Length: 69
Image 1 (tube, rainbow, N blue to C red):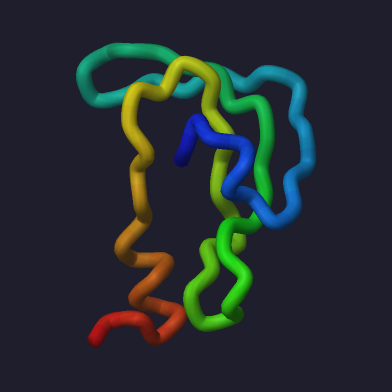
Image 2 (image 1 turned 180 degrees about the vertical axis):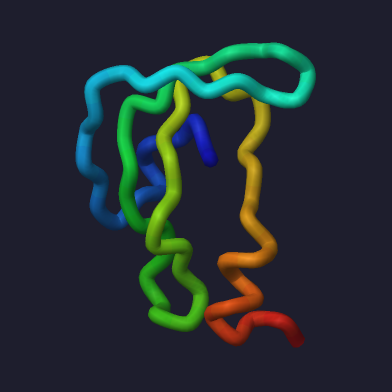
């Protein structure tokens, strides 16, 4: 999840979908897309979230791509 639309290589806008964080904070998922240009260093399903304070990286997505070294 990220709040920075400029890092997406492609993005599909979504109607606002709510997400709740561990601290009970809320945000709106406003898009979904791909981050990264190198096929081994991409996250294919990243969410663009309005109201997110920090970028949240899925370590498991990178691990499954072979980026665990």
